[in-house]
Picture 1 (cartoon, helix red, strand yellow):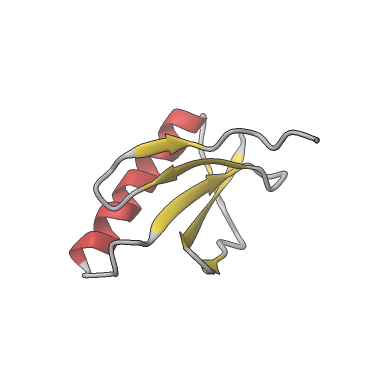
Picture 2: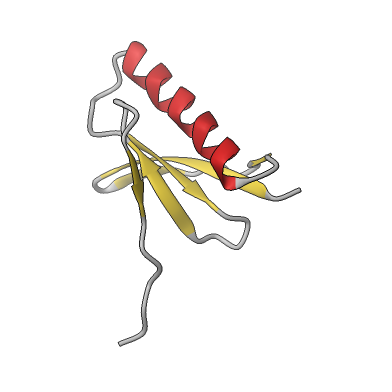
Length: 79
């Protein structure tokens, strides 16, 4: 089962999830990220905080706003 990481991120600040959580697929992991983002909103975190979902290999896949908007992060390309 794949492990996903849920980092808290804003401009020049990032709090890394070092343990991650196993989910059956990315869709389920994104649902978890939406719940985390809504908790941040309910706890009155600054609205510029996002949840970034990353794969085990470290690649960031999507970011989730506190309002629950899901934005894919395109893969890095070589110049």
